[in-house]
Image (cartoon, rainbow, N blue to C red; front, side, top):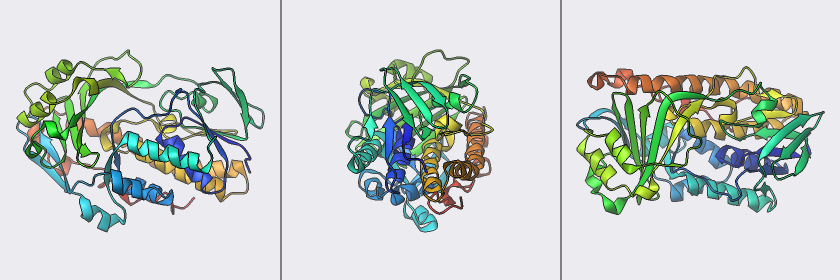
Length: 387
């Protein structure tokens, strides 16, 4: 088996894979391009399928302590805020699936993962290592922009939608702009009337737009993400400072409760980015290089399963490596267990905004609402699924 395992990318998917491998007796090095470790972004949904992974990693208490479990969720009309579809969450979801549903600040979860990885090996994370070159000759040579070169027995690409390692598996091609842009921001709860957040987890839908808001950090912050359709996008990254007036103009005329939320949003919390994805890959592995998360199956966020798919990947890959005598066989088992499911979610995620953004919002109801739960995604267990 592989003696040296390198993971490119220290996002949530890469750290889940690292910790899952460490807990199964493997030594792992994680290479991260950023000079300091931190996770941009704000809220993150951890559905039961992903919660099972954190239970396996010993981190479910982090979800329980720092996460929020909404009793209900609602799909709301853009203009007057009336509920079009309501879903029960809270204890009902946990009783049905044997695992909880959490809303958590992405940075909190990321910090807990990084601390756990370093707890196993203080030298596991190497920051300021941007991958620029990959070559294989039975092992994998990794070249970084800081001049460091390293050799590993297995390289795992967890480096996102613009993955460099992906080029060692599949012919290089740019990610595709999907026609959607997003804004995000955080509102301190003390700035708004809590009655405006009923229920505390809700998605407004309307012509060409979606706006998602939910409470995180023990009820102290409201995470907000708005989406709109656009013809083009040229800027890079998802940490581009946004003009708060731009967001307010985009959602002008929407429900007064949403207007109040935007009025209370601190300008320094506002960012925007373009949404990119890729078509499904015919394979995720070549030689001793394999992919997980957005590097393998970048998807739109409208099913709330992008992070969950990366988390599932990390657990299943670690299991395949731990339960196989041969690396090549382990990678075959990993891809066979994961590619069909991730591709299904990837393609279904493209369908959701077509219904959310339809011109006739009044026609939207339970029969049009294809949720991640209705698709059977919550029942999946990456810890026990056959590989």
